Length: 275
Image 1 (cartoon, rainbow, N blue to C red):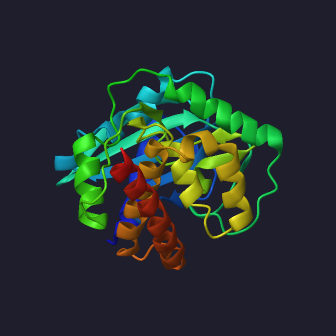
Image 2 (cartoon, rainbow, N blue to C red):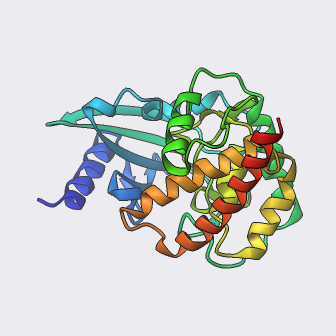
């Protein structure tokens, strides 16, 4: 049995456990590690999501991220309802049921590829939501200072100081396939502490293929992006996306990423040597 077929059967098993009727087309996530489907529970729409992971990685914050995101209030997002887990050899499986969000996904891909005519009220709600989230206290961590130093020095060298002074809670994977119209933010498995402005940096870097959208992101989040934390955050996202290119993701982003990295490193070098 191939992997995708096994995932489909895992989805059907989860639906049976929860007494759900699968009514949508199953959707696979990044690298096929998740599968999800619109479902019905006693006539009410819900979202059934199945995630898989090797046992050695199961205890990371991401495993219960959607469940723990229920403590986040004031942001339009799905709510976690219930879950179950089982094992299949060396693979751990977690099935989650979340509330259904009506609306339209902003983009079928993580990166923005076409212009989105989003209203000012949509952008304002995004900014307000990220600000509210940043004030939340949590023990969850997206990247530690040690991890930031190691990854960025390995990628970009040791000439710049990547020390972060301002931290805040962040979604952690704020790209265009995780947001909706009307405004909502999906997929909270990886949220936690990150450099201030990390979410804005993520969205900006994922917008580089559509300069008009990239400019809108930058203008709305200038106070976050044009700071040491914002620049380091952008470099973190660039490093992550360049790494994912090895798996075949978004190859046309490579040139814009390198161009942006050069500009950011020049800014970091100036700050490092003038401090």
